[in-house]
Image 1 (tube, helix red, strand yellow):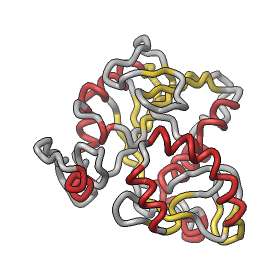
Image 2: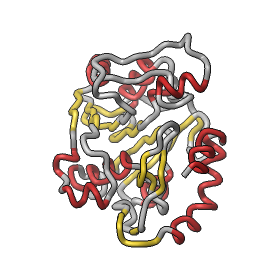
Image 3: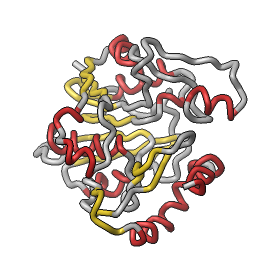
Amino acid sequence: MKIFKTILNTLPRPILIKVSYWVRPVIAWWLKGDNFTDPIDGKSFRKFLPYGYGKQRENALSPSTLSLERHRLLWLFLQDETNFFTSNKKLKVLHIAPEQCFLTIFRKQQNLDYTTSDLESPIADVKADICDLPFEDNAFDVVFCNHVLEHIPNDTKAMQELYRVMKVGGFGIFQIPQDLSRATTFEDDTITDPKERAKIFGQYDHVRVYGLDYFDKLRSIGFKVDEIDYTQKISAEKLKRFALMKGEILPVCYKH
């Protein structure tokens, strides 16, 4: 729908977040059905909303939680492959630029000591620059930082901060938009026109397009990185029903 594309490319992200809380229940009611299911809350719809700053992806955005394909994939991985929801030990969790689809659920979990941080988001607990986090070394068992690093000019410093605040033995998931056909990451700060940046980098406020070398850059910081295509473990029927993006890679990072 053209209206969603116009809104995405016009309203600043903090305003989009605030507005979404008002319109979400109405859209969820309007699209109620049984073709697609959001695994995060279990609600089903006749279709999901389109999403994308350039070419829009059909059935990408869940009307109820506002989850995208990557959020639903991450949820399934955490649920089926980790102790994130079941740990008897209270986990200290840092969530950079917290996504709305997770925020309320994670805050309610009794097994989590949950902290959110962002420089601009109105829903974050701690206002902070990812390149200068106000947390002690080895503070968190789990760190989430998804679709953030492509916005950060000094992503090396940001990665070093994520490594610093993660506990030894902890893990993090740092999703990024990635071009798997590229061997190396591309960036060019001489391109300043927003429309041109959106065309080349996929979004007007992105500063690079990550290639396959993203995983090795994380390793150079000190992380052990597992490149997990979790969609291979999910049936074709569920891939379709949950509206997942087949072949998407989860970068699961560990500090040893």
